Amino acid sequence: MLSRRLALGLLAATTASAGRLAAWWTNDYGPALLMQDDASGGLRYSLCNSRGTPIFPNDTSIVAPLLSFPPKKGTALAAGGWYDTRSIFASIFYFSERDEVVNSMLKCDQKTGRWTNTGDWVISEGAPTPANNSDLNVALLGEKDGYRVLYNGQDGAVHVLAYNNNGAWRYSNVAYNDSSSANVIASVYPPADLNITLLVPRDDKNLGLARFYGDNTWRIESFPRPLKQLSNQTITNNTNPANLQLNATFIPNYSLPAWDGKPKSMVMAEDSKWTRSVFYVGNDSQLYQVGNLNYKWLLFDRQDSTAWPRSDNGFLAIANDFKSDSLRLFYMSDGKLIQANGDKGNWKAAQALPSFNATADTSNNSTANPNTGNSELSSGAKAGIGVGVTLGVLAIVGIIVAVLLLKRRQKKKQEAEAAAAATAAQHGNELGGEMKSPATTYTATTYTPTELHSDHTGTTASYSNYQQGYNPNQVYHELPAQPRHAEMMGEGHYKEAP
Image (cartoon, rainbow, N blue to C red; front, side, top):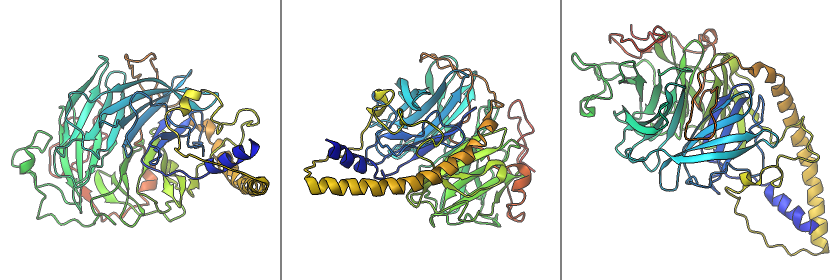
């Protein structure tokens, strides 16, 4: 029996395959993330009681308990989370095996770090059918305005699902109806504000942009090459897409590097100075950044390979804290799930996420033990490995030797991870509850959170630091020669037209 357990332990230590990601910032705690295991389909997650740096267990059986509507393999993911001074919550979005958009509400067991499920709902009934490979983005806008979920439809448009304080989901409208070359969406919004910006790959040279305005329209644009302006007409989501063409006479003074119009994913960011950025992985597996600074879209300089290592598969996730300008990018690099730290615009060396809490007492309560805590959390999906073992005396000895070697290697790995976790712990107290935003009341569930924070889109570096990272000659105004319309309360943050 002992030898069988040892053998199974060795198998459990193997690396699972990695799929799409989602990340968000939980007030008082910091970043959290999900990642689909594309072999099992389960949604693995960082321990929900992590502080500062997410702890991402190696145990592939620790998956979100999504039993009512299992996620399809290859699903896009979006999420947001908050701490209400009593409990930690996450609201996650994914596609079911029937391509329905599903919202699941999770509550953290803070003793074990595992998520429990408080309810699952299909929210896309009656809405245009999602594309088979649709992306997902979510904006948590506050108590009054609720949620907005963006997805790609089979018609090629980006559609919006809305949840307001009336307690029901509904289909809202089309946000973007111009051309797109891939079903990829990046979006960002400032806290408790409807000023949502979304970007999509338009073609092999340009990004398409839509911006929500106070007159309930989405303004459509493109860059580096803008759209041809229509006579006496602002281009919006109500404009006939057949009339939308690129401005053939405009000559961009920069091009998107390593861009073929088909990225695996993109993520957006916005800082406390309302500077927006988009990050993508180019066709050379390198990370790139384009941002809107001084009212213009600019190409930013790349960080070195220490801060931005090469991506294994092109999937990205981002988490941020708007007011403190904290930013974390997550992606797979060299077989490891890494965190690139760009807090306040100062990029540090990227680090692999730790798999355990180096400061916790694990003698009786290991987070990697599937029998610890709420067993429901490990029942959603398993690694799908069947093992038949016949062991003799020599095999037992061989396994014991292998375990000793594994422990020696694991000790070295733990020492490195402990150093990373200790570094992150120094900043744990800096993640305090300075960011307060209105409540989002989800009346269909059993709880009413009183605070919420940003979704998997995030914030960028500070204004002054960004000025050091771009070429001032690479300029394009977002809304050229277009009269400015009042967006909403807070007008003045987005004065981007000349």
